[in-house]
Structure formats: C-alpha cells, structure tokens
Amino acid sequence: MSLADTPDPENLTNVDKPAVVDVDGQGNVYVASAKVRDNGWLWLKQWDGQTFKLPPHRVNAVQRIRKERYGEAGSSGMKPQRIADEGWRERARAMTGDMEAAEAVVADD
Image 1 (cartoon, rainbow, N blue to C red):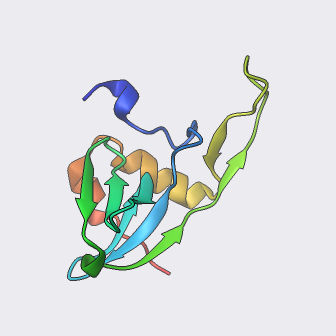
Image 2: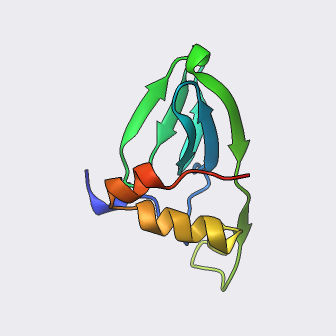
C-alpha cells in the first residue's frame, strides 16, 4: 500500500464516498468510501487505505458524509473536495494511519 492509496480528508477524489456504516454485530464504522457492488456486497475503504467487502446481511445502514468544494481551483479547473464537517475531518485525520484510533472512533448520532 502506498501513500497515494491513503485517502486525504482534505483532498478527496470524485470516487471517494465517505460514510458511516452500521455493521451488524460491530456497530458504526466510519470509512473513506463505501460503494455497493453489482452482487450486493458493500465495498469499503478505510482511512488507512485498507479495503474489504461486507455481504448484504451484515450491513444495517449506510449514512453518507457530505463533501464540499473549497479553496482555489487547480490545474483541472476544479476546486479540491473535502469532508464538509470539521468534526468528521478530524476523525478521519486521526484514522489515516493509526488502527487503534480507527477502532476507537465510531459515529455518534
């Protein structure tokens, strides 16, 4: 895994879909990206860059985290994207390389 594989909460790509996933038997998990595959499984990318899949029966709910564009436009003409809420950005930064923090940080509605 390279540094480029690790999502940056201050500079997200168009394919990044941050979310809180309610996993049966585990509770809420905050991920950098969550996408439903054609076979119904949920593909997840953690903030440290690791990926995994969950079968449909393990997923109770997926709540998207809002992104926003900000700052100056880059060479592509687009402004960078980040997580809109500062609290969620802080949680993501804490999780980018620290698995203990990743396991300790859960969503609280």
